[in-house]
Amino acid sequence: MATLKYSRQREAIKEFLAGTKEHPTADTVYMHVREEFPRISLGTVYRNLNLLADIGEITKITTPDGGDRFDAVTNPHYHVICTSCGRVIDLEMEPLDSIDKLAEKCFDGYIDHHTALFYGTCRDCMKKNTK
Image (cartoon, rainbow, N blue to C red; front, side, top):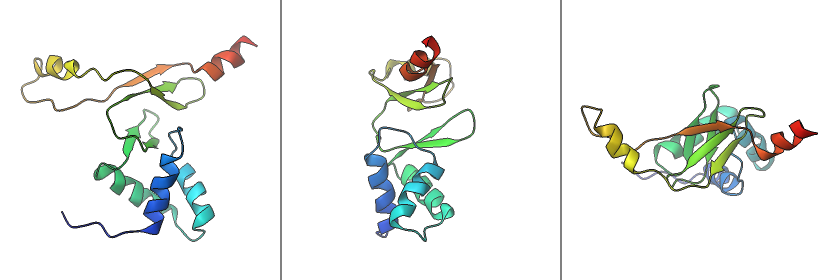
């Protein structure tokens, strides 16, 4: 693979993602990066997010509602989607690597990794619902 040419805009996207615990959409990334680069296009942000995900520098989380979310954390980990507010939250638990071997027993091939999304209600929404 050819060496990727340095881009200040791409670097700003990575820095924004590294500085947040949220899992923003491309639109949210665009709004923040645009503060530094007013002429950046939404298409440029989308292309760079997808490129960074393809080369493993960020994680792309595909949600059931069709909106991709992005995460600077690339090590294997799980996420919870709040069914009330839609936030994507890191789930602090060890990855279940043994599930790959279990799945492989039911699959005519090789399983090299998995993803999982959990669904629930976040603490903030639970507090709102009890008031």
